[in-house]
Image 1 (cartoon, rainbow, N blue to C red):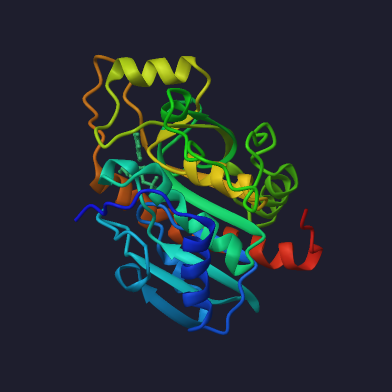
Image 2: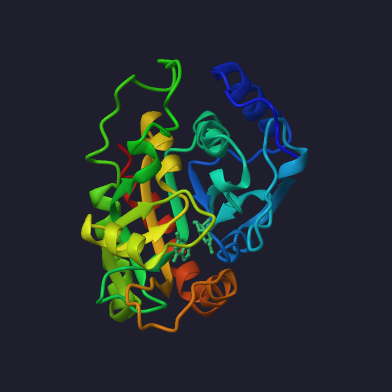
Length: 292
Ligand SMILES: O=P(O)(O)O[C@H]1O[C@H](CO)[C@@H](O)[C@H]1O
Ligand SMILES: Nc1nc2[nH]cnc2c(=O)[nH]1
């Protein structure tokens, strides 16, 4: 199942992007990544052209329940988009370069803004299951010990050797999301905070949850940060949000046990609101044309 090739050159990425562009007339400027159980976002696209990951050159396959494994091109309220209905994680056995490959393909397709969603455990005591956290920053635990997707030779056609990450999560897009959430009456469950990525696939021990909380994280998951790093490296704007699907266990008396079924279930409950939030954002990005 695991592919041997772990590094993808500019020409490899271009080959895949050209292959896709030869089969669809859609030229997306917005790319969307759907987290666990949040693939319904892709169903909102009109005039779809769909590729199964297994048919796309160099693409890994989705192996996680709740990640359909389809790349969907289409329009969202008239705006050309491409949507990953399912993402890749390192714990699936793929290299960090492989799980982030789609970001470079997005770039070569013409994407300017990436919107990522994920499911995450809530660490902040003020967060409830079903809250939506706009990500303002991340802690990349694997990255801090060398598992950064940009490790390896740098191709300047993608970006600089040492990209800045203090502005990774676009301020204007975060404000736009907050404004839209207010208009839609979502204030009660909209939050903002710091996302911490860990390797997984085991959920956190109590001590680990306490640790990452003390380090400054409000939510914890197993994705997103590597994709964000690669997207920012190649100059795309990034907006990301976490659906708090479960409360991280931080108390030795708690009877709660994190599990993937609960994660998917919470996704179902909030799906409609998340879809409305993201689709309205897509429309406003178009109206403002506020690209970097
Ligand atoms: O981050 P996404 O892909 O939403 O998935 C999250 O949910 C899964 C665990 O239930 C893990 O893969 C975690 O990262
Ligand atoms: N690491 C991690 N990932 C998640 N994804 C959804 N919930 C969680 C969680 O509690 N921990």
